[in-house]
Image (cartoon, rainbow, N blue to C red; front, side, top):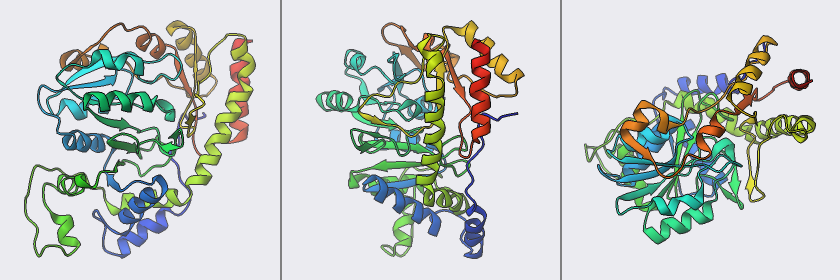
Length: 375
């Protein structure tokens, strides 16, 4: 059986985890946490990078730092993971879902402005498949209406928009290092931002509401409870696992891009015969090969296709069920305007196996099986 995903492993993870144990510093903010954070600051040219226990927690931190209050409205796509919504629902916000673009499956930037009301506080662009949203337009709208922008870049690590790294364009950017992502620490994430005025509040929020970070820097002689907070700080053992992959980030990206390009070229003859659609990557984007998907004509065709691949020992999956159609989505928000593409596109998409060290033999077998299906 060809798995849909295998968590990345480069070989030094256990060595670094053992080093963290030997240092007797396995809780948060040890040497590996600091290494990972500094790596991201340098790589993405960002002032602040906080390693977190998940992208969900990064989004929760961004919601607090954006001062989202009960009754505020947050604009986001319905075609996304539940964490995008949960982070703001926890703050008492009302969700305003808008339609996606049929090409990139990202939020349709042309529909955002009409959805804005006096209660709107935040826009949340989600960079689907590591392909950037149209950020210039989104940032211009946010500036005109004095809104915060929180980038859900869970899938966008090492992707860029017009040369700018995803997660560094809005007020806050959130990464995921879940086992399904390009780089992993099992469960983990990161919060990025440029405005240093948020640093102290972010530190307090991440450290259970205390000023413990200042204590460890020697700025105060004892730390105390300062404000609302939670435990968003990952174990240094998790950070050690991630550090091994950050050292190999370029190699992992090269390997995944090879797989993506192989699929894209090999399957093009079938797409040209309109059996399915291939991914769209606008010229202004540099994507990270987070996933490779195809879009079948409809739900019936997709269901039959996934079943056929499984019978031939290939695990493929569909993706999100639109949030506005879920019980919680109906309870905590509403869809603004027409659902022209969100549901339709969600019922067509199939993700093919994609992971670090996916063998050439397996890729060729997958493509051959797809060709056989379409005869």
